[in-house]
Image (cartoon, rainbow, N blue to C red; front, side, top):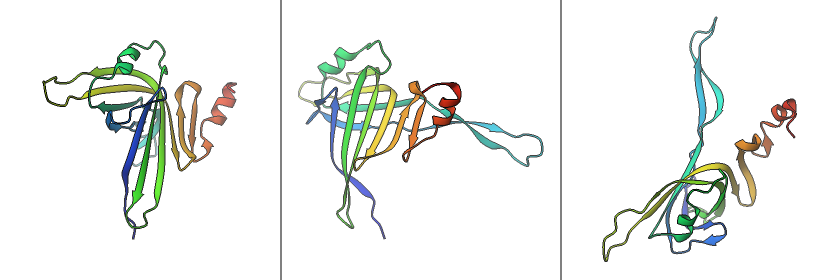
Amino acid sequence: MGMPRTLKDMMMFNEGLAYQGDAKTVTLPTLTRKMEGHRGAGMSGEVQMDMGMEAMEASFVCGGPMRQVLRQWGTPTLDGVYIRFAGNYQADDTADVDHIEVIMRGRFSEIEMGDQEVGEPSEFTTTMAVAYYKLVWNGRTELEIDPLNMIEMVDGIDRLAERRALLGIF
């Protein structure tokens, strides 16, 4: 019998600046394949063809306004902001701790200052269009997705290496 891993500790960094005490929640990108239905001659039903990845998006909520984020608004390059999430996940049956880091590059597509009320905590919410994604589990890269460079590493295998080579992209 196994117990699920529970997030016990987390940290968030923006360009290396620690958001200790500031970051409340982090929503990591949902990885979505773009699928297209196809039913050709001799097929008894439709299958879904993989057409690549959908755009990635992440968000985080802080307990108040974040000057650094405001200063990054309108970053001209699509991978101009570097965000790193670090989390410790512990299983209650074994007490084993897994450390997961997610490294993202992108730019902010939305900044929401939220409701401002005297004497009440406020929330500062950001949404980031993600152009680069890497997930590292206990020091091992499990996923690395870099659409700009046509790289898609899964479990140590670059699934697009052959296609890049055939195009002359090295």
